[in-house]
Image (cartoon, rainbow, N blue to C red; front, top):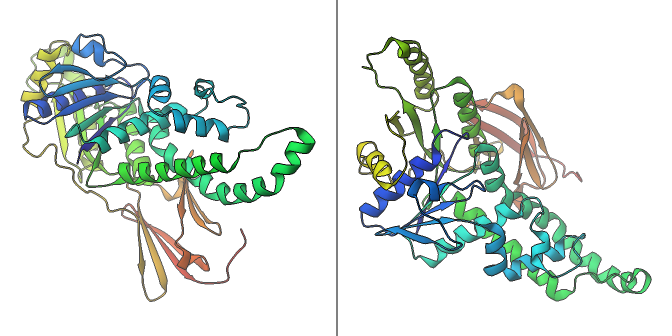
Length: 392
C-alpha cells in the first residue's frame, strides 16, 4: 500500500526543497516514489531543472515528479465526477465540465482525487506531496469533509424534493431537475468523499509534516497550523526547522541573528517536543538541481526511520463512562478563550477563530446533551449525559 507524506508550512520556508530531498532519499532507497505538487505556483520543474508535462515525468531512477493541473485532471481523469458536480451547481446549465473550473474548492477536490487514485493504483510505494502555503493547504484538506457534510445533510432532502417537485418544475418553469441517474452520480461522489476523508486521516497511511523557520511570524503560524491540523483530525508526525545558521559562524554581522534564531528554536522545541524535530542548515549555495537537493538528503535526512509514519495524537474517541459518554479531541496549543463549542441535533461544532469543524454524533448520542467541556493539556474533553432530544 502506498504511503502519503504531505509537506505544508508558510510560504517561502522551503517546503518544496525539503519535500524534494525526501523524494530523492526515498528513490535512492529503491522505493518507487512520486513527488507531487498541488501548489498552483509549481516549482518542481525549477528545482529539478526540467520542463514538467501534464503527466508524471521521470527525473531519476525510481523517482517521478508531477505538477498537478486540476483542470487537466478534471477533464481527462474524472469526467463523470466533473459532470456530477456540474449537476450539483445550479448556475451550470451545460454538461461541459470545463465550465466548473472556477468553482470554489474544485481545484482542491480534483487534486485530492488524483492523489487518491495514485494511492489506489499502487504504482508508487511513496507519494510525497509538496503543498501550497498553510491557508491553501488547510482548504485542500478540509474540503472533502466540508462538502461531504453538506451532502450528508442535503442529499436525503434533495432526493425527496426532486421526486415531488420535478413534474411541477418542468411544467411551470421549464426547468429540468436532476433525474434519478444524476442523483445516483451524486451518491457515488459522496462515497468518494468519504473514502478521501478516511485515506487522508488514516494514521497508518498518511503523514502531515510541517516546515518552518526560526522567525517570530513563521513560528506563530506554525503553531496555528498544527492546531488546525489536529482540529480536522490529521496526523502531524514531523517538524522541520529550516535555514538554521551554524553556531560557529565567525562573523559579527550574524551575532544578533544567531540570538534570534536560538530564541525561536527553543520555542519550537518547547511547543513541539512531542514530535520528531529535524533541523536543516542554511546552506551556502542555492538549493537548485538534483545535486544540491541530494546533498540535503544525505546530510540531513539520515535517520533510518524518517519514512516511518508515527501516531502522535489518537483520533477523536468516544468512550463510555459512569455519566454517559466522553469525547476526547486533541487540540494542542488551543486557547479556550478563542474557542466556541455547541451542539446541534446531529453534530458537535468546534470553532477556533475562523476555522470550524462539525463532528457527527453517533446515533446512540442523538438524545444526549453536553454537560461539561474542559481543555486539559491540549485535549478537549466533552462530557455527554442523557437528556431530552433537541430539534436544533
